[in-house]
Every structure is written in structure tokens, then in C-alpha cells.
Image 1 (cartoon, rainbow, N blue to C red):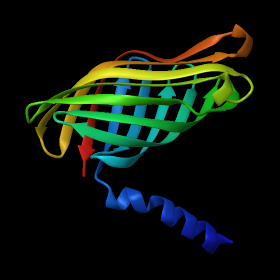
Image 2: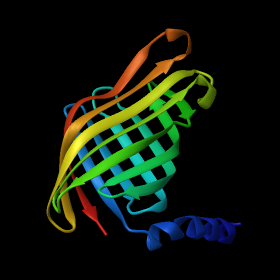
Image 3: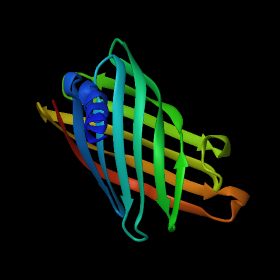
Length: 178
């Protein structure tokens, strides 16, 4: 049984080895985020972890997407499987969305991304989950990129009983590409 599990994990991780990508961190006023994202055209994988300090809320997402370069612009459409540990509740959601990024010369870039899931794409107690950010990046030298922007992420329970913000504010970040 362990050898089968190991084989499945190894096969699932193979695209990470053969695909260029980046590991990043973001720090906001009340939240931190760690992420991995494939770079380049075609199929790609992503992983995100978001933690809110004041309430110990957190999300973990694994995603897949397809990226299409159009000159200096990269368009990505995809979906994520997200585990939400919010207010002591363990919930799931499958947000869909995308990202648009634009290179501004060799060192600068701007981007925006957003993913959302309604109650039809989430576990029973979730009415809506959304996560989005907009930002700018600067690459002083490869493999380092620094970024700044604004991130918003929230979860709303079914019936509108409450809405919990996981991130709502500016951030600074850094990423290493490989």
C-alpha cells in the first residue's frame, strides 16, 4: 500500500520537476501567504497557502491551469481545489478563474488574478468563496522577483449568517524562480 501511495505522489510531482516555476511569499498587515506557480505556456500547476493572524483562519489550494502567451501578455485560466479552515469549520471549494500578467520590459510587470466559487462549487456551508489580487513586480536580478499589491479573500456562509475576510489589504512579496 505504501509503495502505491509513493508511486502516485511521485507521478503527481513529476510536472513540478519538469516545469519552470517559482516559490513565493507575501506578507500583509494581518496575513501571510506562501505559493508555488508554474511559469511558461501550456498546462501548469499551482499551490497556495494563506494564513490570517488574528483568527488563525487558513486556506490551502492546489490548482491547475492553462497559460497562453500573447506577446508581452500571459493569460491563464484554471481551477483550484481549496481546503478552507475558517472559524473552526472545515470546508471545501472549487474556485475557477484566471490571471493576466503583462511584462513591461525586462524587469517590470503587472498582473491581476481572481478565483471564485459559489455554493454549487463548494461544500454545504459555503455560500461563496473568492480570492483575488492585483500587483506589480520587479526583478532586480534572476532568480529574485519582488512584488507589491493588494489582496482580497473572503468566505461567506450559506444563509448569509456571516462573511469572514481572510485577506483585505496591501502586501509586499518576494519570489525565487527556477
